[in-house]
Image (cartoon, rainbow, N blue to C red; front, side):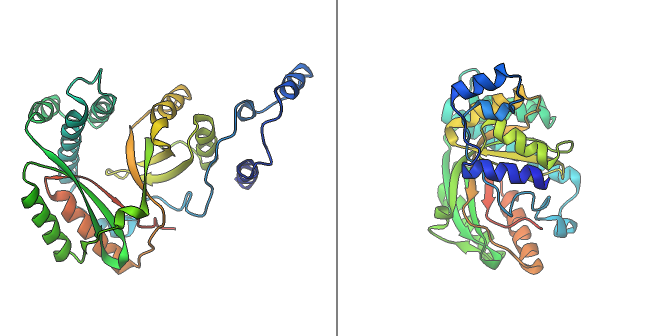
Length: 290
């Protein structure tokens, strides 16, 4: 592990820059072994203490989570909202709407009933508006709350009420702490940290992070530029990885480390917001457990 990280950090600093094409060709002619990542331009890969910092930041507070059936129902509800949002932005034809196609693939991987998917697509024709609420939660953590609603005033009041009730508040400017990035998610159970870093380089991703999904399964999140999502996804598929989901996400610039009390309070707040039907997705800047 240390040797791999050392080599990758050297690459990141530029000390392993790509040699001239003539040198590469002469090396191959001489029968020298040239690593595959040396045959393409180096891409920046962030390596820092947050990488592989643990599995799930909510691991200490899992006892407050609901039963699996409730979690599954809530996941299907959120997928339905994401379908509606994708249809609103790009139309109901997945052949012409890659974002919708990726969400439908995610629905299949989660065994979402076909009837629920079709209902979500049909109901997306209703006039809906998309909003992003900026908030501050327990311990000073920051939240971005994306909603899709047919009544903006009602949703605004309900989001504000849930925040105040659970130790949060609307906070203008929180969005400045997040960068809009591309993200490709793959199962991570059988992938070592060393292999994950290699995959990130080979696929052209800028960063890779280990975490857990809603069902507690280990996953890898490959972070990239918003314009590179399709390329990174295709590259990971070519490398034999199964794609769980891909799309755009808000990645925090700085992280907030919470004590256990604040972590429990933040988890309660995010659960309460997530249970509100108009909420599609929630992003936070809470530091994972070390």
